[in-house]
Length: 440
Figure (cartoon, rainbow, N blue to C red):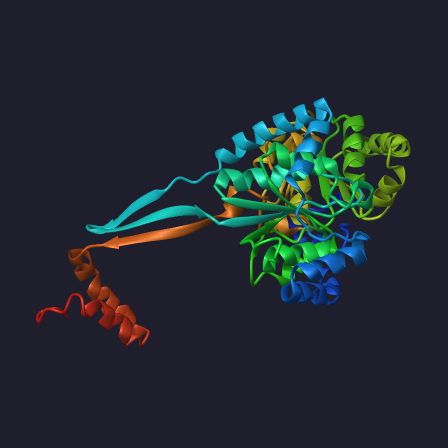
């Protein structure tokens, strides 16, 4: 079921991104190809606002809505009708996520760079954030929590959620998404999806004032719209198909690994699954378990497509080589089911989130670990991390200086301003602290 890539005999130092990029599988997300399709939609929303959103919603979602705003009573009704066990699970997931994200808040720092001259570093929230919650193959109330909670913890005053309208739910987003919004105290929810929703959040309409940051996953058209609006708003990432890598040795439980691969594959036919093992025997056991688990999966067709497509089993000589392959692939999720998993985890450089040991599956992180499940995909974990409170904060420096401290700095500013031929910079200081006759 999984393609086999045998890298035994290859030293870890040789297993670099350059060496592996041609042989490790990963679904391609060609955002550039979608740009031309979404550009006129976004421009139309920029020019015509709510009316354009209405027309594109009718065209793409088959729902004609006079306005995007979901009434407050619909949010309350959705929460009231939510199954008790689902409400309890969302409540506990929210509690854990708040704990983890509160711990991320950076403290204000104060540094005396010289006598009378200080810099205070402050982290200030954006005024308004937009959260996109997809509504394609599956409804994701957990994504509401993962995007809204870090914004709330960061202190964002206004949060607007957008999710595609669904005809089977009266032209409103999925009730589970509305319920999650109500549970978190989000009163501004818009029935809008796709590129028109991103444009609505970024440019603003009569129904929805513009935001400063847009977060949340979506399809390639959502990613393309985010790219188009990057010069106007901050975005979290251009999320691609989900992915998992699992480092496992001979002592790992093949049933656990097969279950975790199926769990990731059921997201999307384009999901990528990579097993990296130091044991050919384990690979054979996983293959046998995976064949059974995939056939019995609720979404068997989706799972089969993902496992037969951009997924593989990589056999390596040792843990060093396994880590090298994982770092080159830079997965969204990395599980380590091997001896000394905690030690190995701290040697990983590139991963969105790392799940340590056999009792920490990705499913825990998706829902209840407290960590954020909005993570970098497509190898972007090499240079960026997951969603956090920092996604909604800006670092602002507060510079304070007295006359004596400016006078002490003035000769250095003379030198640097002169070297850069910026005499106005020098004079802006010297008008305050004229040079003494004996000063060089």
